[in-house]
Length: 136
Image (cartoon, rainbow, N blue to C red; front, side, top):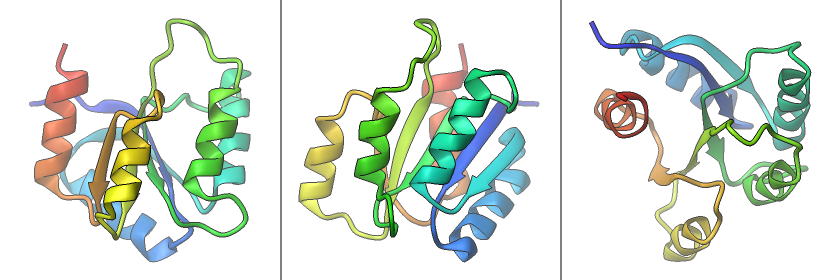
């Protein structure tokens, strides 16, 4: 039996995508806890509370790019400014329905972003993430 990731945070304004991704994660037995929020601001508020110990700290964030109010890029700017512990490493995977080369290039230039992939999440991709970042 593979080790489950303690906590995954889904950040996507499309509730259907969050619902589908939650099902894929559950069926893959990938995570102990799955938290879904529908925007960048809500994700930041969740993370601020997790830094205070009031929410589970996510080990992995799946972040949509195109969202109203605060998109994925704006979230990453604010996320970079959070006062995170030095030893805390949260894997951030950008999700998009588009493989726009500009998005990929921009994501690769941001330190906080570990991966860029297109929607939807698949069991195979989750296994790649587990092996690459969480199998140690």
